[in-house]
Image (cartoon, rainbow, N blue to C red):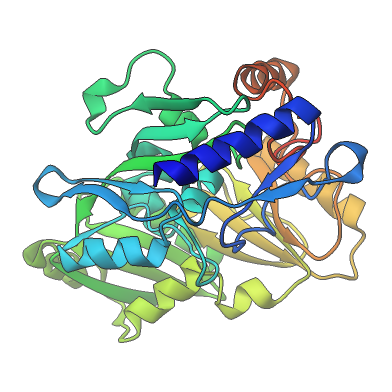
Length: 364
């Protein structure tokens, strides 16, 4: 396996020497996500594929920690964990059969369980990576107490490969819940938002929520006694297709996600009242995420300005998650101070700016 690392490092050094951009890409299941800017001189760069560097390096179920190589198929990792009664608690979306652990961490995306369990970055304990000079670096470890100073491992989550090439990742895992049940209640949007926030303030084993088209769906996970007690309190109708429903939300296979040409994700305060925006909405994470599907007939610039202002007024930000139409900006514009921090990080880890140019922000 070290031979693969040496080859990847040599490719990076050659690219840095010739100032040639590199596009880090494994399964390609999340190519749609992020800025579609092609980088300097209109070129995204040669493909740097770490897929061959795969496999579980170390897994100790009793310690709730797994270390795997970045090219490891996400499905393979989850299958191994499930066989031991454990899981990736942030419930990462795959968006295709070729999803890898490296892409999972690089995008930093989390699924329906995120509001109760935490985000992808919260479970990253350590990373091994190649920086823009081809140097083999390791940060963190396999226990939380190893984190000191700048938390580089978590910094890699969501960086979209702009800081370096992930080689290995150590993750905290959690036991699978003893029981899960999914309930569905009919109500309007305002009632759903109030209900989800009220539940959040109570000791209920709520692991996921979703509101769409007048129906609030809630998943209960945990000890059998706790789930059954909560089921009696919350009421509603229990649905049999629990697993397939939450998978459709996680993988965006639900009809809602296919209903428009633009899909926005607004991350805002969970208590925010219903938003007056064009298109259809689906609410997740107890009200903290509002998905917005917009019809193609609407003016893109008008929609973007309205969505970003609405998100900002609600104390959050908006991301153009999917779009069939090129956009000037995918992620919410950063304040000058934050952009300066991003630039300094880029200079430290990728001084020649060869990794995924423009994928996160055009300025980078």
